Image (cartoon, rainbow, N blue to C red; front, side, top):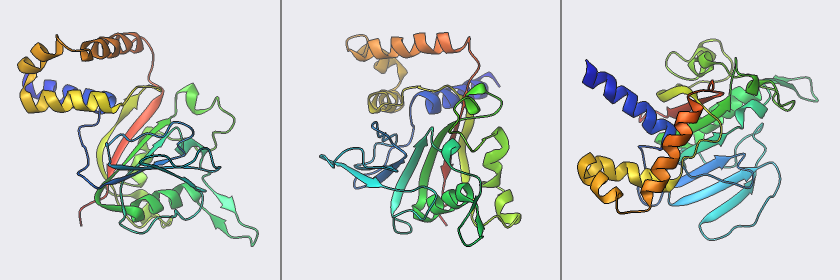
Length: 244
């Protein structure tokens, strides 16, 4: 029983501080609403950043696209290995009336578009300030309130599909839990996490003592200790498009 509980706890921490899945060679990740700091949490070989205005030019292995997230995404079906949306979903309207009088549901439509564009087995990571945290309300540009149960409209039984909201699919929930804003999910810690799994904790600790990574691990531990005194503000979703 203790061993099982420890494994679940370790798995949760892995999703908070690192991403236990990494893409294979020649993969594409899209960071939606990236701002000036696009992220590549699954360590894809190619990164595409998007926002509603042009923020920077293409450089090296990074491409930038202007994208209105309330409309059709500019990607082919089954072409993207993973998407991420950090502090983005709360800015997507729940409904909108078009000039011709038609009512559309941009948030539901965005979830449909992400599903359409993902390759089978692809991932969607979303970190969103959520109810009942004040972070969900305090920014006046937040127009979409996310609750713990919101994910159920797009995964499992997919309430949105059965209620005819325009979402015709169903994601698998890989991870869904509370977290805090601003937690680092860098590639360097992904590498640390992968070495723990590959070489074993004892060998890793011996090598860690002789490397600069120990400084980063101590920093994470101190940050976690401070955050434990605060209530979490964000929900972290990791959703997967089924293989078939």
